[in-house]
Image (cartoon, rainbow, N blue to C red; front, side, top):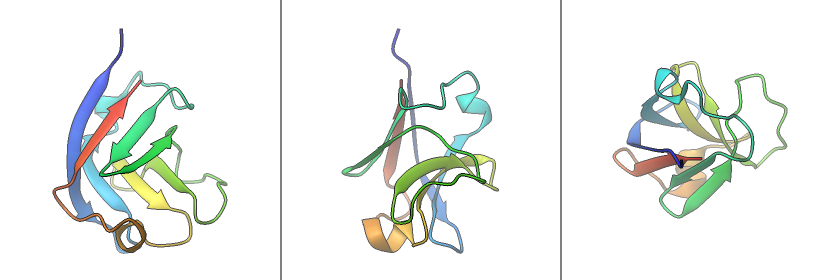
Length: 95
C-alpha cells in the first residue's frame, strides 16, 4: 500500500537548506533508499540521507537534518537560491 506524507517548507537554514515541517518521527518506518521520492515544487529526489552523507557536490538530496526534520539540500550550495523555493512551498514524501 503506497504511503504519502504531505508537508511544507517551514524555514530556511543558515546554509540554505529547505527545512520542512515533516519530522523524523513521521518518517519512522519509511525506507531510506531510492524507493522514497521527495518532491518540492518541480524538484524531485530519491532516498533520505543522514547528515554525514558523502553525496557529490551540486546533488539535490533529502536528509534528516540537525532540525530533526526532513530537509532538502543542494550539496555544497544553497537549495533556496538554486531551486528558487521559499517558505510555504508544499513538500511530499512517498513510497
